[in-house]
Length: 434
Ligand SMILES: Nc1ncnc2c1ncn2[C@@H]1O[C@H](COP(=O)(O)OP(=O)(O)O)[C@@H](O)[C@H]1O
Ligand SMILES: [Mg+2]
Image 1 (spheres, protein in one colour):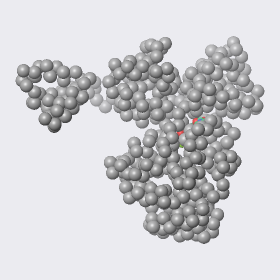
Image 2 (tube, rainbow, N blue to C red; image 1 turned 180 degrees about the vertical axis):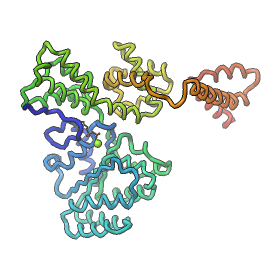
Image 3 (cartoon, rainbow, N blue to C red; image 1 turned 60 degrees about the vertical axis):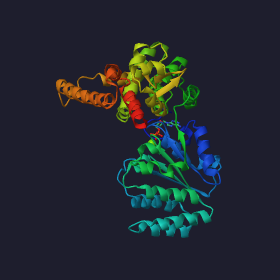
Image 4 (cartoon, rainbow, N blue to C red; image 1 turned 30 degrees about the horizontal axis):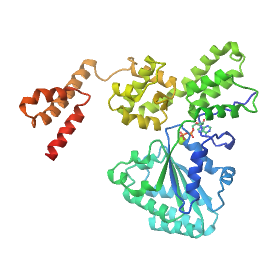
């Protein structure tokens, strides 16, 4: 039985399987090792490799290689699914994880005392970190899926103020992971404005480069009896788009195909690719559903515009101007989509990270078999009413202050849905300042 070197589904915990991310790790390590022991926030869409990266800091061999001495204590917690915890529960949990990692008996006893109380006293927590700092110890909390905490309304500005106080005054650093930048998830302007977020350097995880993706495949295949043809490697990169997770799925099934008689060999390339593509789709689609479901409307429109335009003109570079002609507000959506690794920038143009994702979007958008809660007629009526109300409101706001000789001209200007909001805003500004 030949062991498949590609893995997907679980984060990478085996250091031999971890690939790349050298620059990101260096940045995190440098910040942790400087005098101030500084925090980092790893940002990247689901499956880009955040947990795998955090797990590096739990590997004794990797830590030694990065020059971490025994004064560093790394504590990993994943908040995934914990949407409603309270600050007390948060501290109890954090301390519960810290306790077994603390070698000093006196500190361990102190932790046990604090965490067993009904309410965690922040003053006691502060004293605890003071003790750690005096003993020359540095605590690093690896908080995976930290957006679950940021979104949680039980955590108010005082909580973040307290956490910032600990991180800035003691040897305590946070390395968090979240799908989008932490500030995106704040449930109030007060929290979004909190200086807590200034303690972090944002590190965005991107897909691998073409060279890295090729190297990953090459390194994984070393020591196995399999080697992919150059064309198959190029094809894998094309369908998986250098994205670590999708690359692993595609690599896994390509490896599988190479070890089966019915798919191996140069003459079976089409059958092989069909096999890989079908398995790839099966595994990738639940993630596409998630990415799409977690996209705002502007992002969905941009994804759809890009998918349709790329399908129509497969050999053209789709530029920002092409997309802007289809959707005026495309620019504000492109940047988050690139950060989420769903859209890739290349040669001054854009494409979706995978053609399989492109086809899925088009299929999803035009799937008429889905049952609707209302009939199309009801929906249209409702839509038209809302549209008329909106146009009417905007027109009224502006025209009420315009010379009647120009009602017709300005009315026409406002009738263009592409710039109605901007024109209304411009007049509103004029009337405010006039
Ligand atoms: N550095 C890496 N080297 C090799 N494979 C990776 C790496 N990062 C991610 N992967 C692949 O992507 C998958 C998802 O990674 P994971 O760390 O769970 O992502 P996230 O936490 O961002 O959702 C892993 O199962 C693995 O197949
Ligand atoms: Mg994860």
